Image (cartoon, rainbow, N blue to C red; front, top):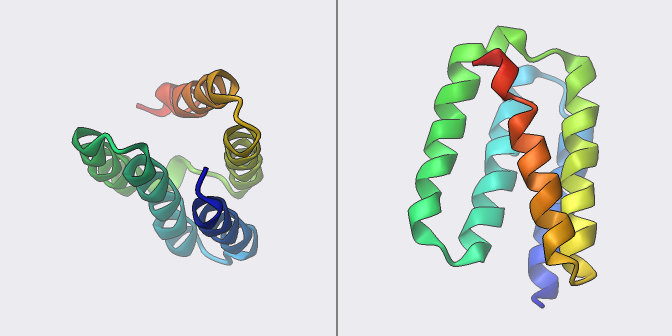
Amino acid sequence: QDESLYNKLNAINAELRQAGSLSRWVKLDIAFHRELISASGLSPLMAFTDVLAVFFGRFRDSVRKAEWSCGIESHQRVIDALKAGRVQEADKELRTHIESHRERI
């Protein structure tokens, strides 16, 4: 377990809570996912962050501020589960988090 990873993810999530604009929120959300994927050691998944950037670029208008807090809380559940060593729980939460965006595509 890398404590610095949890600190980075928590810091990004804290910034997300304070994001005042959609463009700032999108940048931070991408940074969160990029950090998480980078820490996984699965470099081919880094392409996912590029997909995420394209997704938010195309569907920016459909991301309502009310959904920001849902995403932030989902991020926190992933962080907490990983920190506690509950990898399956983190995996399930991350899948749910990603799937929640499917309806916009």
